[in-house]
Amino acid sequence: MRLPHLSGGGVPVNPSVMFSVDSTALVRRFMFEDLDFPPYPSLRKPLAHAPALCAEDAALPQGRHEVRATEANLMQVMLEAQPQALFLLDAAGLILEVGGAWETLTGLKAEEARGRPLLEWLRYDRAHYPAALRRGQGVLEEAELLTRRAQHVVRVIWAERGPMIAGSLEPLKVSAQRTFDLSERLNHTERALDEAIHLLGVSQDAWQAEHIRRIVDFAQRLAGAAGLEPQDIRAVRWGAALHDIGKARVPQEILHKPGPLNALEYEVILQHPLWGVQVLAELPFLPAQTVDAVRHHHERWDGHGYPLGLREGAIPLVARIMAIVDVFDALTSVRPYKPAWPYQDAVEHLIRESGRQFDPELTQLFVCEVLGFSHLLPRFEAGQ
Image (cartoon, rainbow, N blue to C red):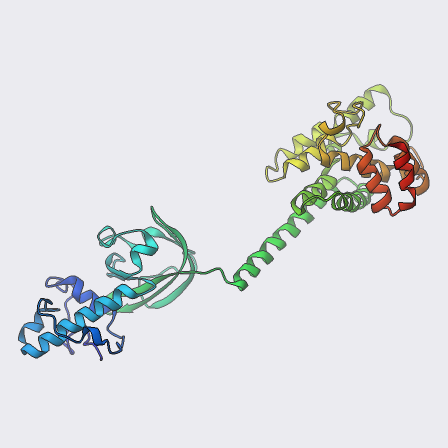
């Protein structure tokens, strides 16, 4: 069955008077003018109480009135069965009629929507769609629908129909491809952030850059051996990259002094963890564990460290990890005031200081699993 067009078989329609007879019926005919309806046996009987669709029906024979009544009822059923939210707008973008799943999707009743702009509840990239829903036809693949009672990401489809715009809203299902694309964007962002944090950490000099590269690797491996979750391992990685950021405020002549520091110079060095925290206050997105690594990586297991003199479990886990890897790399690297120690000597130092300077369990993990000296496990067991 092919429905008559709104123009009534070629007779022009004046938009200003179009809704003077029965606006709802006219709009419903208009929204479905291009649909072919299948047979619907349960609606074939004439409806004695069905109203005429428009004024032109008055001139029809009685039999045609019955056909029109059946068509009206059929259109009503089809309209209400649509899985999309249907809308019809005037030239100004105001809603003339809604249908289908409109109330289910938007939470708005038809009487609340009529006469209001559809764009009141849609958010989308206006730069790419400057004339969206006003003329022509098109599709918005991802628009936000925001009403008092609902919030969805929807696909918007619209097309001009004479002086009006007909269209639909369809809620988007999160597809596997969309999930993959989002994951890739997040991974790219995290990689870029990792790189930015690493560059911030190594911005002081070339020697510092190599030190940061090594302890980031050590810290990440020790965090993994300790069973930390991925987000906590990331916080450890960032803490390793930024742990000495406060040294940017320490004069270079102190940092690179070849001999022992005097009391005043040593007091300046002791401030670098707190200066680092002050620098990171400008980066509020950093996890708390990362800031803890910067603040507490010089605390000692026995409570004789700085800046707060925390001891044992009161020291944040990420800072206990940092204390081990930072000292090990410092011992095995050339510094202005000392040559590099052999690995064996540095490992012996870690074993001696296990339970005094360092967390004993983490020290065992670092020596036996991260460095691979599993044959030294009895040394730790004997110390327990």
